[in-house]
Length: 332
Image (cartoon, rainbow, N blue to C red; front, side):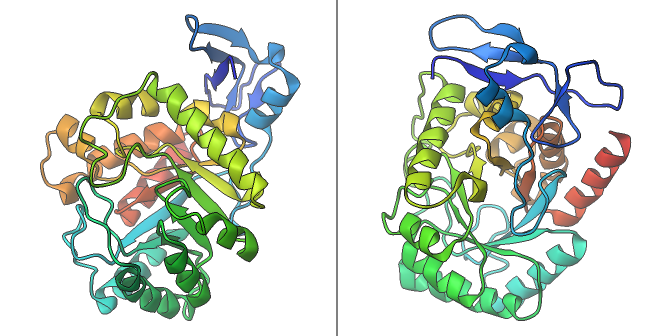
């Protein structure tokens, strides 16, 4: 792809002639920033875009797990690990995990994402049997008591299979389904949606010295390549969510570049998920060393992403996020 098109997103009922809906939602655009590896950025009119490019940017995203994607959705993070960077392992015991999940659902989580392997910078891999032991009982218990969709956060096919058997509905893989060659065929065979995230390196080494030619375009190309590969493996684009992978092999400068230009990823034709909650760059910029005290910064980043049309916010603090989103919707 020689040029990449980032919608300059706007909002409001007063729309000029020729305004195009962004991903079928309430936001819209009339112009875009055309980006290239060879030349300087330039501004182009939506009316001058190739038809197929405009269609990807403007057409409604299909429902995900029966959830319409024309409004913001909240995915609650449930770490069943003893070494989570954000909550210190307070949900490691099944009883605590279930209580937390119930509270998230009551507060407005549309999806609960359950993970049994820490992927914080420097984390070591977890044996599959241990990952299953941490996640399967929680998923099975939740599946028996709620209709809220459940996601398994894993890189491993065996863990995903156990989670799907227990009642999970979506597979969220921080490796973009590259870590385990059996995962994509499993998801295709089960007919479940997947979230494809970009990461440079693995959790043990990803923050050592991340480098890119152009972080925005490099991440876009990775996601487009992975989505095309998953389509060939039998997972249609309609069942794929894209995540640029904030904090996974990125410096603060890389994270900010992705957040400032995240509307570019609508060109993938998929719903976009943002997982920036409580991350290190929020602490650095917001001057808050404690991860569990980064709610204000996390909300600021999440609302900025919604203003660029991001459909799903993956967060630790569901109640605070739900309140902020309700006010954001009321004002906008």
